[in-house]
Image 1 (cartoon, rainbow, N blue to C red):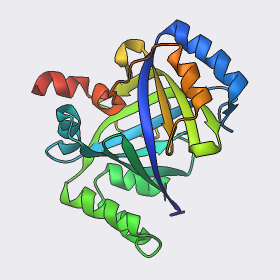
Image 2 (image 1 turned 30 degrees about the vertical axis):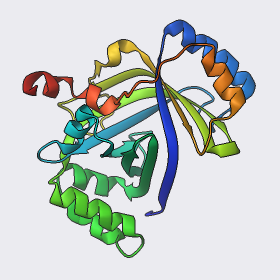
Image 3 (image 1 turned 90 degrees about the vertical axis):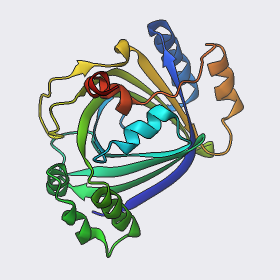
Image 4 (image 1 turned 180 degrees about the vertical axis):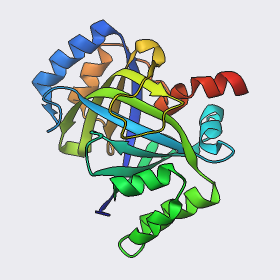
Amino acid sequence: MSETLSVYRNENKYILSKTQVNDLKFKLDKLLTRDEHSKESYIVRSLYFDSINDIDFNTKLAGTEIRKKIRIRTYDPQMDKCKLEMKQKNGNLQHKISMWISKEDAESLIHLDYSVLTKYFDQNEDAINFYKVMTLGCYKPVVLVEYDRLAYIYPLNDTRLTIDMNIRSSESNFNLFDEKPIYTPILEGQTLLEVKYNNKLLTFISNVLKKYNLTRFSVSKYCYGRKIFYDFNF
């Protein structure tokens, strides 16, 4: 249950128009393999946490070089387990730590009971890190974000391209396992392309992307999802 994954890699983000989405799908289907969940798009739902003083939100807005995000992620509210994740960013390099926890333990975290993490201490050190960060920062749920994802993979350099569509959020419902949450569209209904890889992006992929004249953006679904918080506090 407590298996942990730690990944370092580059991550670039771009906004796509509807025309670009359809054309890029057509090209990527010829060059890459859809991941095992992407015969069609699949749902990704994440509940983001932040500290009592919203340090993760504020460091992102400030463009701080070193920052982090903490979330619980599920791909199906009926699953009996989900991922507790911490994404740490240092420049262009991303470090993501993921550990599986039970649905019951996720619900405890949502209700601010961090003690459930102690049961994982003997199995990995990352659980201890999660516990320290969330306890000392008094982390709390702040926004639920969901989108439809289409993912492509290529084994060399652990290359992964994801197309995230219909991005939506809720700042009032923190029930990760709700069957039918009510959301508000974010990012003005735009589609987000994320390009993730180790070392260097393969030339044949970069050549395809160059044809679209894409501009890199520092886009955070987490921050865009907190529009009400931003409007009333900044």
